[in-house]
Length: 163
Image (tube, rainbow, N blue to C red; front, side):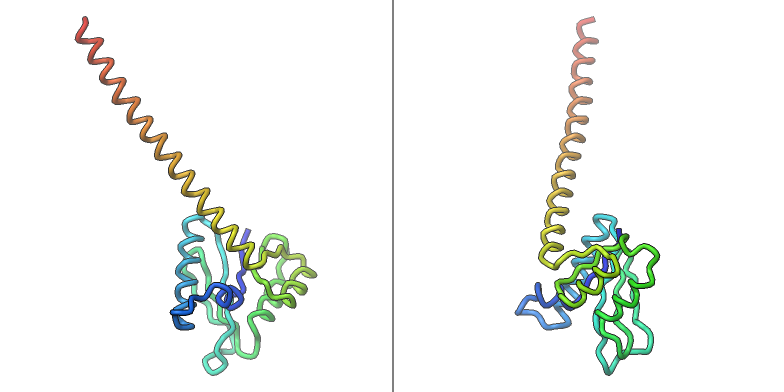
């Protein structure tokens, strides 16, 4: 499953007031890259380009598990997503994260899976809790294995001392 995220739709819902617009954008990119890397999930974060800096082609940066796309000149991020996802052979293989009604309607018609921003945020928190729980469980197993070996050595030593 690949995730496409409506960048500014997410940013405007989670932006911190004490940060500038670009600081908020950078913070979201960093948090998402960390999250998707940790969970080995691939995603694309799509933003509208600044009109004065945009090109005829989209600007793309690949950070590993997270691809950042700024839409091309004259095309909004919403329209870019619609155009890009219309040509997929299997649009059901992607989930688009947006709360934008127009975009959701258009992408539903294409056959994409959809997730609202608040659902996405809850999903990421749930995945983080599961990962922490799994790590804690694996640590306990590792500790138990260590304790087992330690006790086995003690018993073997005592058994050898009695011989």
